[in-house]
Image (cartoon, rainbow, N blue to C red):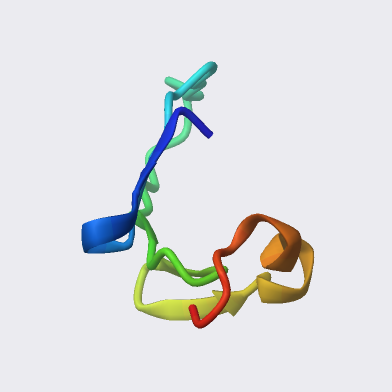
Length: 59
């Protein structure tokens, strides 16, 4: 984590690596909700149990 803006409950992260397979035609969207859940092409993935020690109390 790079920073946490407490007034707005926003984590500021720094991307350290990205990769794409230019041969793959299918593309997917990915969105971090900020509470340990993520949305991939409309489906929610709950990884909160893996993130709890990184989340501020009350989130």
